[in-house]
Image (cartoon, rainbow, N blue to C red; front, side):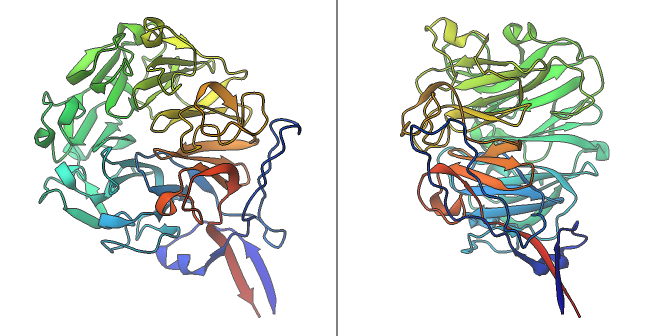
Length: 454
């Protein structure tokens, strides 16, 4: 009898029963302060395995639930109440990573939840341009046209219907609201109308649309933050709607603004050029726009330009703009200091992480749960503790290809598909960890196919 171990693209849900466990180290010791800085301490799969499954970290708005993509399948772990596991069970007590029932060919996953809630709603975009949602349906955030109240949920993926069967090319989630960009350049929203994030002219919570609502067209790209959405039009203009606290929209004011209709942003317009082409998803290789990505943590925003520079604006209280600023300059759009070009951003509750083009990771902002910088000081030694990082700190990670996380949990995917997590691990948000994790530890996730032949 011989044993062969290899990965293979999953063709059907039933084949997932053959998955084994990925062997990784259970913990990684933090380096002493005198050791060389920026040491990658993560451990790959055991030598008996050829290669782990292709996990990719994703970003969501959840407190205790995490997810990743692997070969077109969505894997969910941590809190799975109100159908969040997507496996037909309302409140699944199994916190381990499990695939969502019957949903494959997925290219993007997002999650929407209100600030005071643990249950939330998942949204998935397939390669065919279809959107599926599951989990809590409070305020119609599933987008299926109806809701029975605050405890309404769906425990299996539901298809969201768009006018004229339009093909969706990008998907985003805010607090209790979702947004989608179609191939024709239209942006639709559904969910809570509170604070104006649905863009339907209302700031009343129960006045948001329960199915896709057309907010704006002629859009080149769509960018979603905590409770707001930005769009860049084909005329090289930036518009936003939703809630901006302390200038997180890039609107140049410290006042709290609830904006229920698209409003132009002159400050961000100054960064934009070359966006005249057709609608594209964020990070599309076909995108020629000078602005690659816009996102926000709580009360602070960040814009990434094609030259790899991160520009921030908003609140400094938790260090989330990554620069020292006055009351006047903090709400202005200014670059921050990262020593290498940035490729992607991920926003948490009060913190950001950035993936550089060379595969490094930087973090800044609130470190109360260790999600911004772990225990790494600005000089590269250990001992940062829970002190906020007011400027970007390089983390001891290399060869990273994707970043993500939830409100107070951060993830990085290495090129060999090892997924590394740090930050808040409550209710299984980091598998095997129920408390805050300050070290950068590989996660023991399923994903090795083992075949036995006679």
